[in-house]
Image 1 (cartoon, each protein chain N blue to C red):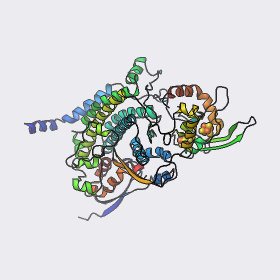
Image 2: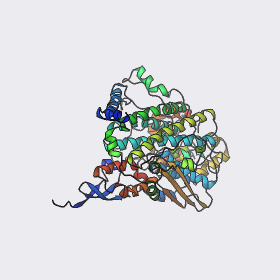
Image 3: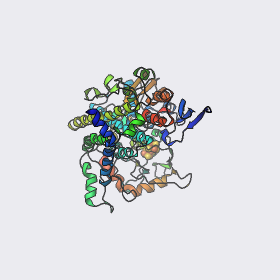
Image 4: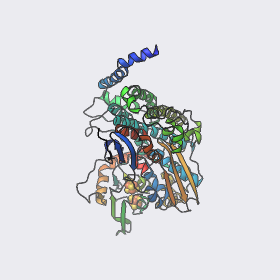
Length: 417
Length: 162
Ligand code: SF4
Ligand code: SF4
């Protein structure tokens, strides 16, 4: 029998299963992977450097574009860092809105992950079902911020606008009878909160649908059980966070361990896995979706009962309301000042981290007392996960590479920054 | 007993049948997709689409060339030149937005003190040649005139939140 020579293979950056622009150099021995070398940097946009050249608020929009699957969470870390440095706390209502949107973002991220993970391993249907729910979340995003993805909704000192009292409705067209349009508009009759509530109420049912398709499915299990096992010790050493760490059985979640905003008043559980393989991480994320729906419902309840301001009343950081700006000279001066040179933060450095759907997402901000950050360092969750790829894939088959990429839930906007 | 049950289930492809029952049910349930160009998904009054310039009801353009939008634009997409007009008011002689640079963040609309530059609901624009992506003042004013009823209605709803 002739010896099988090991050879090197290029995976990506244009591979449909590579989730964006991942390039892997695989050293193969037959169909077994011996070494993995992930290459990063193909989506590098110098976000950190850009942020150093702009007044603080200008970079909020660029934070959306880091991890473009969990937009508002990135913004959250950034505005939290600014608030920490400025020493302000947003109003409680804004905090609830932020928590609610963080959780909606988590759902949207996990739905995309579930769909893409399923699609990579050959389950097409979940993808379509997941996008059905994702569409609702995009509608919620749009109703509140005006953009379906890159919301730019959180601001230092609160959120940009309060939740609207109306949901946009489908219009009549020749393609649909009145009855059908009414069915589409059924949950859009009330305010945005009603829409979110009906969404959160229905959501566990939807998760049950995904689970029917995947959890017990023998093909799904064959592709995920026992693949890329990571022991709890190794997961810690590799710097895992988020579901990757919890999948290995370590109960670590910033929402519980270092509660920010109003997470300490929320009632939810942290699911943990047992074996640390792809299947456990799948189960952890599925359960996280249910818990998120729970948190959303609690937020909706609170927000319904407690109207109030969503922005701080601090003219040094927050622009004045429009009506004031048009009438009061002082407000107009603040308006001009804030929109031309922004605000100045005191000298110092802060680190603000949040539990993003993928793990710990942190912003390290150094200020030298100017209206621009001196340095911004972004701590993406995915980078540590991607670095562990070699260890996780060694000895597995080529077909498992896509399963592992799926389970890592990587997005290159964030890893390459 | 449990072992037997799971063995039987596995042999009869039970979980696959459950999954197929689900997809079959969805096959007959009402569809969630829409027929795009004829039908559109609803857009909220906050929608941030194409940027346009507005006029006052008298027909006078609103923009006073204060350049706040230029200063606030994170993508540096706006370029403004200004001059004094014969009647002594300050107006732009050039107002370009590079639609490729713009990230549709809506900061310009937030910054504008006279509601001159606004993000409309209009999204279906395209360019055929390089260079057309620089939207000039004339283009944006013309679009603004066309979309004014919708823009005004949207602002009327949104003013309570801003
Ligand atoms: S929407 Fe944002 S990026 Fe676009 S022109 Fe306005 S400020 Fe600039
Ligand atoms: S559009 Fe508004 S912000 Fe921009 S220059 Fe004109 S008046 Fe000023």
